[in-house]
Image 1: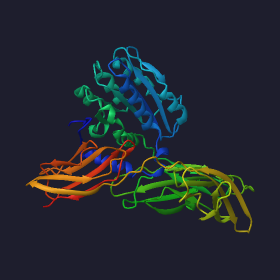
Image 2: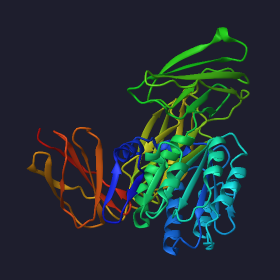
Image 3: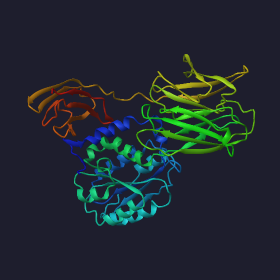
Image 4: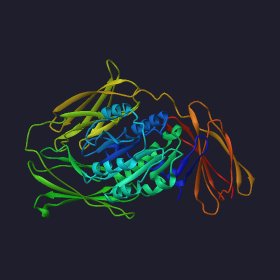
Length: 486
């Protein structure tokens, strides 16, 4: 099996690249709190790496890690540099927030010297033995004069460490292929540094598949209610969740529910104050087996605490933001009213939420604008309690991704076509083409520079689907597809 190789003007990727794109697109919005594990970045800082390549590797690392929640219980990140003498730039417990991690990555200085990878891997073994969470060694290298790495790599794998590698195009392919953890097609990339950002989403998806945490937790616990949350592992078509819960030692008072596959939280109501409950969640699917998730929690003593006691905003974009509140008190609250308006004197809009909801998404907002958001709980006894918070939307993206147009497939031979398309040039860095080969029906992809508006494809399968997508500095845009004649 060969690894992916990305060249400046012409890029060939296997079918798994296209599958990786789809998997990234299908990840839920909450994916960045999805994970628990250790990521140790092994960065080639030797003299064989050009200053420009070193800078691009650091930028790629910063972009790759930026969305993750950091710290114990989430994702821990460490950076180990490879030079004549390895240097631990920072350990796994140093950074618990993205601001400090990003600042540290920008301040890393290249070591130069020789490539003593073997010594660095020995240090990595010690760093990645502390906890029982999933562990990833992300190795960024030019693949030159790696030394004797087979033995320490084998020992890391024996410790349960997954080895993922990004190398420049002049790397020692055979050594890297032996070092990487399977599957090679999603864990090993050879890429020109000018195009390294193209693999960011695929590499991040590979990491997420390794360190995704399947946990059940109780939040917004009050004297009479609680919310159970979990990482979604099913889709709307692949199964359902079975939930049951009871008080400790009283299985006869067990309550059961069946929840749709797209569910990721549920509110439990009419609970007893100051009582310990056990909850069990089993994902049911005919596609694979899942572990049963469990959690125990104790309700609060009966009190006069009213909702909302906390209001927060998250997932802010240019035109929307999520507003959350708690604690939930569905036994007492009839509904919630969320009002929002531009500060200082914008028109006020409102959204109603049910008593079991603890968040809602505000849409059609203005980019780069500050809003005052007020959440009011309307109680069943006629009382009302409100709390406000300020929310800021992000600036509108500097560039929009124009769609391609007029894709044509002109047959030139039995299994050949001339592919032609039109596109506006602003912001383009190239094009991705994908198609099916003949006989094996395996998929292939090719990267073309932005000046290309046509290419000839050979050995196509009958009724092969050909797709063209624009590539921008910020990522891949929406493409268009056509099917060849039978």
